[in-house]
Length: 544
Image (cartoon, rainbow, N blue to C red; front, side):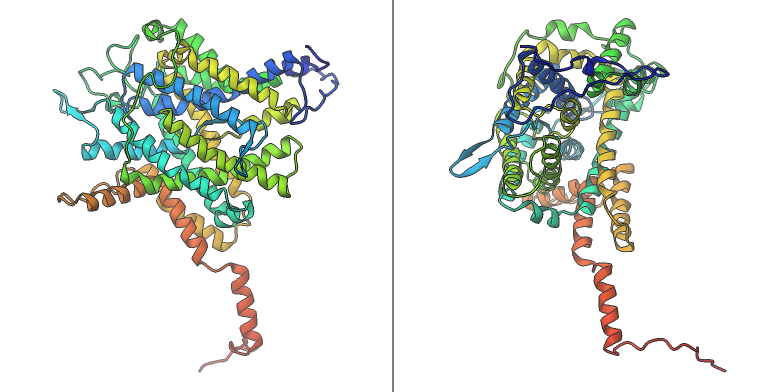
């Protein structure tokens, strides 16, 4: 039951100025190795804690103010359904089975959660929905536009994502090398970096108090404080108290990275959030009524969103899935390396294809369960490498704990009872890891003149859109009755107003049409040999 695993290795903190005692490394457990029961539970719980913040964050953001402005019951359901669906789809990815000769799943300890890449795109799509009247809004007595709850907007986003999930299913038929040639690091690195920047902006807004109507700091009215007058101890947007609440979480994460044990370091996001919860509760910023009113248990389809297809979101969502596919190739490769599985050959290619196909199937399944698109998570690879345990048994326990967290609705209600500043301190740090992942991908470039030019061209518009989101809002002002044209123009506006979408298009196009510097040099040398270009003379001509 206990095994011979050195549990002290996981729990021993780092103490500065003391000599570190030499400890025996724990044994390595392979993909199919049996685990002691206690070790399976401990490591599974660790994996669950490591991914829970990433799973619930998109639902917290998209359901809240500044996005869909949903009622508290709907937001609680979004978080619970995200946890439940992640547990189910993680089980599918880990198990890996064959259906009619087609492999589905990696067969590794690959966990699945809500995709971050859809969040900045959803911001543009929902903004367009409110602008065009697809989602309702009103003007209060102060002349401020108030966006009303829009569950049909989420249903349209989910339905469109279900349609676009067919793309990764089709791309899973291609070999991994072909995918890497189609989407090289210059494309994926730039795109992921800009996705991270967009996410950081939303996290920073929450850190200052919230991302709803209170950001405008009206002098009077319901939203003169954040999130509104009904919240406990509410203060205006940007108040020092809110900045301090977020800073508690941020500093806690940094201190855990320095002093924490291996176990704490792997769950540092959740540990930092727990410290922030304690401080927020002690200072009176937690809304206990949210937890008290939440049901004890819930499950899928308790709340429903009317599914539909939102045509302007199809092309942007296809770009999101392309990025997710390329990320999945890298994440699954890292999982193979950490698990000591082959990273080349038929077995490796089978895992890559099965993982990409499973991501598409999981996103389709998530839509049927009224949840957001899913993708394979990468952060759990660090736990595999540190704990030296790649056994799928730990992954099944991880899925079990995620399922419990989702079913018990009180757990989801805790996240909604917190002040936005506490969540913002967590999400800002969490989203910065996405931007850093993009920088890491770009680091593989040789940074030739051609590559610098392509990245500069993409960043010029991609960063510009992130800094000035409404720069294109007054270009396409068609007000006619042609719905097809209106939908096409809305699609163009969504793409141009989403930084990473337009950057992905620019980098893909320029990378395809601009000749490589090696090819230009070879052509130049061949022309010299053919005397088609005169060689420069050693002595210059003097013109009198």
